[in-house]
Length: 473
Length: 99
Image: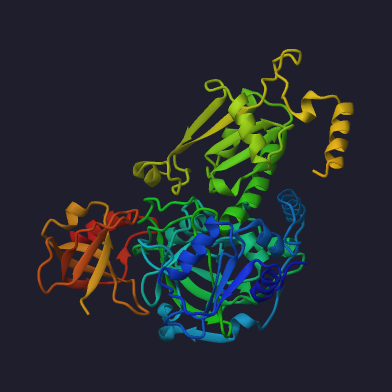
């Protein structure tokens, strides 16, 4: 069972040696974010900063799950759980559904600031990177929104920037679930869309918010399943949205259907600050509620940030399910965090060019977040990048093995490889690298891999392994 | 303390044309409200004019032009611009300029 709130999670990762507490004063203006950024790049710990310049009484927790160890603890598993086991645990739990329970009071309501008293500059919102468009409140958040014409409620993790005391600007992509709700159900009718930006909830709730999940899916139920216990939710002050009751901070707001302000640029999860700024949404804050002695959570976005791990797992599992649904003989899928969620490794029970082409077409049919797919035979361990690189380098034909596809209107505007014009138009391309043996090649002439498991008899393998063990290796 | 702002520009030559332009500025005054945004109608000068606040220009990916400008704020505008979400913000500002 996962930890019930952020504070118990932080205590757990401190106990496992994965959290460093800093009591000396640090500056919200780049300094504490720089420390968090370096930690991501060095596979280092999470940080809890207890003394923030200009903001007595506030704390900031940086990079809750930017390593597999912390991801494991977030699921309530031992910190040394293998990546393959984490994938398995996520996939098993994702199949379950544990509905949330509604409560009438909760820690997130300990302090309420409403109306004219709202001032976003009273929160220690960090300047995450030098050169960003502003201070980002929403980096490790959970944004609740509701479809205008159905009961569908979406939880997503989207970036939000402080514009002034009452206004936020944000960039949920237009083809994200929140963007779809806004553009389909509110903008055409000139209605503001209520949202709640939840900061510092229990970890499974945030994992669910980052999940690649179906339209109409209920992330609150997914959060319960991932944490193996129902999430307690409580009604917002100014809307009929429900939020995790144990959250540190809840910012209630309304997205304008007809107003904009500057948003971005921002150093994002692919590991770059791309030129996607300017096309965003604007929200007016109505109420802020928070716990006493609150902890603002921060993902120092960039290479190997928290989203790299979280979207790696949920994205890979979503890819596997989608490929299975379309009849692809998929065995395993891995999305390496180092790829900035731009590459997937797909192993298949039967390969060839037609399969690779089908994979890239299926994965780019609606939203095209992955731009590189390496397709390998199922004797390659997708979690072993050395084996994947070996297969890709040796088995992918430089001409016949490359399967590109281009598309309009659904590309990832954050993909650094795209030109400014491509990002604005959401046009892009993906490619599958077929690193499997062509199925028409006879087995008698197909190359044999020169490894212990493939080029030696089982008897010799047993002897070698026994000798290896006997040598104490 | 001298007043400093920064702004983000897709085409910096447009805003340094010497005529009145609409800009979204970030106030760089130290303290809790650093980076507060304001929308203005203003005239940008390079080299900076004495007595005017300093303006730093950044590109759409946040790269800072090392040469400073100055900015004379003619009028502070409302905090938001009329446009549907996901509109091209630079085109929205140019449109506001023509009003």
